[in-house]
Image 1 (cartoon, rainbow, N blue to C red):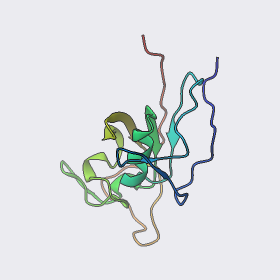
Image 2: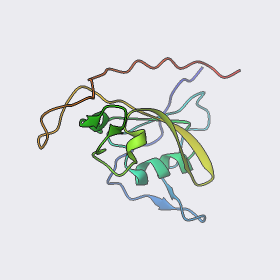
Image 3: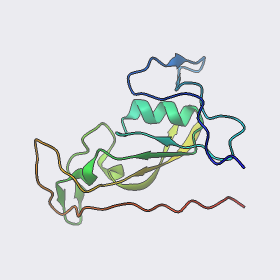
Image 4: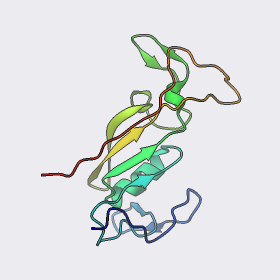
Length: 135
């Protein structure tokens, strides 16, 4: 059983192939003979999420947002450190692009950034995901 297999190295700065429907392809998509493929990115920028989702990756794992770092209790994050909406700054959500849907999990992590070296109402976290087979 092949759990994960890659056919290309994916980098944020690499030129993508423009497909007929106007979406961009990230280095050709998942390997077809793999039982499971997922994308791992540092930062969940929309252009990267769009490309991996359009390429039919079922799961995208990301970090970088620090969970918003500065949050208001009962409201949530004030910023994201990228261009996704504040409602998806941490945890599990979905992303749609190119007529496809991917699950997106963003870990809030445990760090800060050099411009805002504090966290407020955003406890640090380490994520443990358990992936189970579909029925």
